[in-house]
Length: 228
Ligand SMILES: [Zn+2]
Image (cartoon, rainbow, N blue to C red; front, side, top):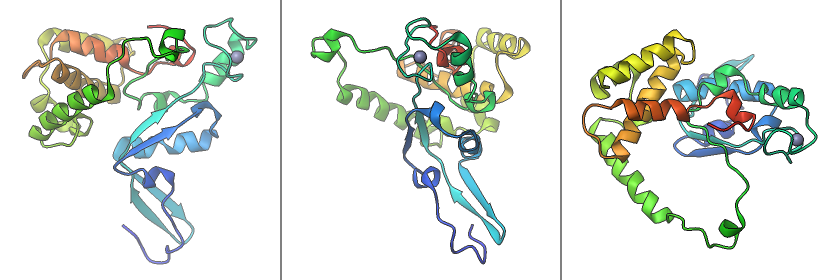
C-alpha cells in the first residue's frame, strides 16, 4: 500500500527478493540494526518503511539463506582451530539475536570440503534429482492450498498437519522446558510435514519426523561450530 507523499521511497533488497531467494553471506558482519530489520519480513512477509512524510509497506516474502563463520577471524572451524578465544566466538555468535535465530527453520554446519569432493570423486546426488523431489513436494503443498508448506497458516496447522500423539507429547515437553518457542512450534510442524512428504508419509506426521525437524532448528551452538 503506497500512501501520499512517499514517492521517494524505494524497495530495498529485502523487498526486491519478494518471491525469490535472498542470500546473505557473512551474516555476522551485518550491522545489528540491519539484522533486527529482518525479523518483521521473516514473520509476516512484508516490510514497512516509515519516514517523516509517511509510510510504505512492500511485499517481502522470500526464502532467506544466510551463511556465517563460527568466529570473527573466518579461519576457525572447531574451537581451538584458530586464535579466537571462546569469549570472542560467543560475542560473534550473539550478534544474531535469539528472536532472529528463532525465525530460521533449518541450520546446518558446513565443513571444509574433503579432497575427494574437490577433485570430484565423492558420490553426490545431482541437482536434477533433488529438483524432482522439490517439485513433487510443491505439488503436495498445492493440495493444501499453499505454494510451500512454510506458508501454511498457523491456524490451519491442526487441520492440515495432524501429528501423532507421541509427537504431540514431544513438542509439549520442548515447550515446557523452554527449548521451543510458540513461534518455533508452528515452524517445526511445517518442517516435519515437509520431511514426512519427502519420505512419502501420508496424513499424520509421526514422531520421527517431528524429532528430525527439532534437530534441524537453528540453535546458537550451531553458530559456534558445534555438532548436533
Ligand atoms: Zn577465529
